[in-house]
Length: 283
Image 1 (cartoon, rainbow, N blue to C red):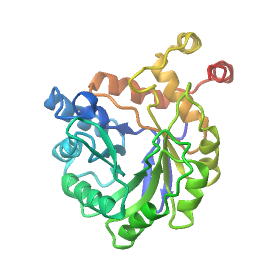
Image 2: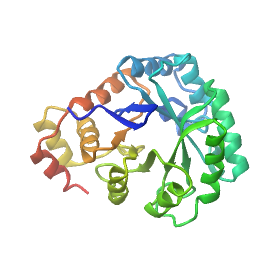
Image 3: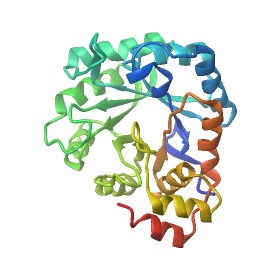
Image 4: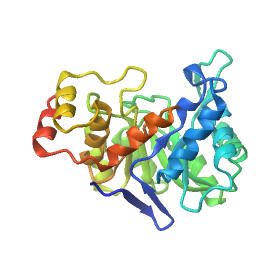
């Protein structure tokens, strides 16, 4: 079994197996869930199964997912940490619109506080406009705005999403960074350097779309390895991420309690070296 938790600050220890709440919204991460009771059940099951790290954002829905989290889990357990994101808003057509000005970011932080029922947010990730990473644009003004809210006590810790190493360094010159959340999985490994940088600096690297997102991972090699270790391909993909570095964390999402249990079981799966060797050939 890999180390099940990671400590990022004196007041921030989270389970490396987290839960991503995005899929609790309706189709396209927009509107209410198809089954509200099931959505609430999934959130409660995640906490019952020992997850202390839930990833969310007020632009999921919008507002819908944060309101579900509050309904299901408030008052929150003392060890539960909710990580949220700012940097975008939703159009009436469900489009994703960058919203990175200081005024927009501050409004989003207050919206997250309101809909989650919190006085301070545990972690706020700045979602960049280039959400797939690879951008060279400065994030100084946006990150400074969040750092100011941290100084005011509305945010405890800061993170980044969709960023490159130069952007991480730029942010670190302004305020400490405890989490990085980029698109990364067994097949999509363009950010290997970011994973390694995070490990070197004690920053949690959260893989979003760890199972491929809206196009699930498909690989004959993955299927064969899963059969060898008596696990599902999805469990192997999550276990690979947890073994990828000492600070890797995962936030698989689902709207099914059964699927949630299957995902969380991957935290106990330790892949042997020959399996890792085979899996590393996929990308």
